[in-house]
Amino acid sequence: MFGIETLSSTSQAAAQIGLVLAESIVLYVGYGALTQAVGPTVLDTLGGE
Amino acid sequence: MDVFGMSLLLILAFVGFGLMIGTLFGFFGMGGSFLVTPALLVIGYPAEVAVGSGLAFVFGTSVIGAIKHRDHGHVDYKLAAIMTVAMTIGIEAGKYVVLFLKATGQADLIISIAYVGLLAIVGLFTLRDARSTDDESSVDLSETVQGIELPPMVTLRGDIQVSGVIIFAVGLAVGVLSGFLGVGGGFLLMPAMMYGLGVPAAVAVGTDILQITISGAYGAFSYAQADAVALPVVGAMLIGSALGARIGAGATDLVDEDDIKGYFAAMLLAGSLAVGAKQLGTAYGIEALNTVSIVLIFGAALLVSSAVVLAAICRLRGDATGTWCRLTTS
Image (cartoon, rainbow over the protein chains, first blue to last red):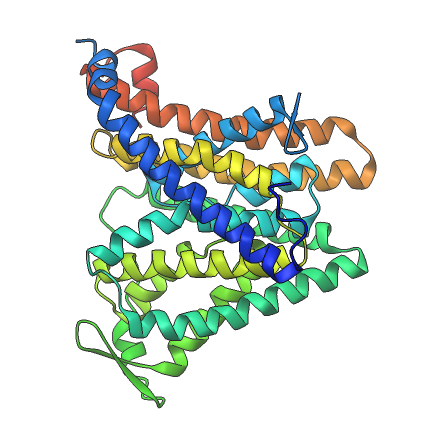
């Protein structure tokens, strides 16, 4: 899974932390862009405007 | 259809759970790790995997916050460095205890009992906090602590002098808790730094989130070495929680935390009951109790995160009298 099975246990553990970090950054940037793009529209819709 | 060894339905369930946890974390500023490890325990993950995955989730949710606070200069690096060393030792000790308990076959039981107690205590304190009408401030021990001249003395930001031994002891205790239970430890570190050491609030928040990130990263790494991190579970929960954190943080501009704090306390108490029910169900082979535990922990998280979103929508609409909106004001 995730292509890290062949690494040693320490490298595998480090790779797992790296994957979590990379995912967090990608999600932060991605959701940030999404929020900027559709956030005001969603707020207007929820606010009943 | 299976993705990364899990059914698509299960992945979606973890994304949904992450969304709820993220909303709660973004709104209340705590609770990210309180429910992840217990939830994995009630689903049936082994204790060491529940703890290891909890720490990896804590790392993933706190790392962005830590980077933001670093940019704002809200970190005391001297304090962070001493705490990091102490917490690293503490985490290793906590992990050692978990792996020892695993070898004796007692890990699930002991960690579950610890969570029953932890969630009940934090839940009761939060409930008391929610019910207090006056502005009772927490007990401030900082002057007493700063008066203890146990060398080496360390000068922190705000020109505060505190014994390095005390800082180390606090970090060690929180580290043991992190390594043993898979929690970030922010619920202890924040009050310890502010009311114990006398660190200014903004610096305490920034240093606290940096510590949570470091302890989450180190703890997750340490458990991953023992093959005790369920990466697909963590990945799925992060997808939901990163979005939920934005929703929860957005809701703080609209809703007073105190309006919903009572619900949050009830959720922590429900989490305590859920872990207890799971243990009893497993011990006595009562399947119904296992179902009750899952319904309790996921149902409570769903109810409280929904209350946050509903309260925010009510404020957006300026509606304080509708049936649903009245439910979200205490």
